[in-house]
Length: 307
Image 1 (tube, rainbow, N blue to C red):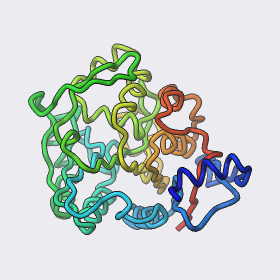
Image 2: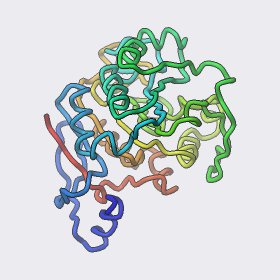
Image 3: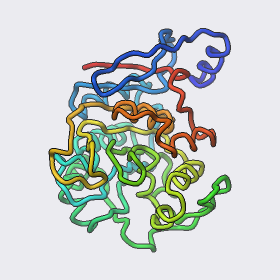
């Protein structure tokens, strides 16, 4: 039985009981008190480890990399590489986490693993000073640019309200597997950057989104193609002055990681870790209403791991 089918049947039968459980001083995750060990979790939240180790523990709880990557497949790993800053500022995804993800995909037999971002600062400096270019190439991945419109192709978004089309990077269109690896952080316009917001790095014209109801556009785009897996880096979390940050004083070392194939659930859980009610982040609510995913964590089979 697929885990989604199991969860739906269990909820209907009244087998799962939601309970609020504390997961450290940075908020609460709503988790079930009844788990079935024969199906993987819908979402895993893990804390108090180093990025690569937390990734491996979470991945094992989700059923292993073979659930997502098959031999010969072309994989895109999309971290946040948008800013020309060092890892300690928390503006970009943790390099050790991305390295571990790329390596695991190749170990699973992926034919290739590509990584890119449509950066906000100069792309070469972003890739270099974030340390991501070096670790990705060390792991055997390929880093490609996203700085030119010729890399993007027009797609339609039939379910969109404000965003009905967009130009999407060719790597996403050619990928068999799409792994989304956002960093959790404050954002002045979107409130938070997490899984859905990170997808702005795969499109060309982000300015339209900002001019035409950013939250609605984020949710609209989420209806087009959902990543196969979302891995939220909450190791260093920028609590203010996002999305670029100003200094290490803006950053809290939380040492969290959230993993789910449901990016709405992942964003809801990450918002709670940040200390924010997911209902206060409009694009999470909008995407939930679109049935992109489920922000009701009481209905999720959640694994909570403390390392």
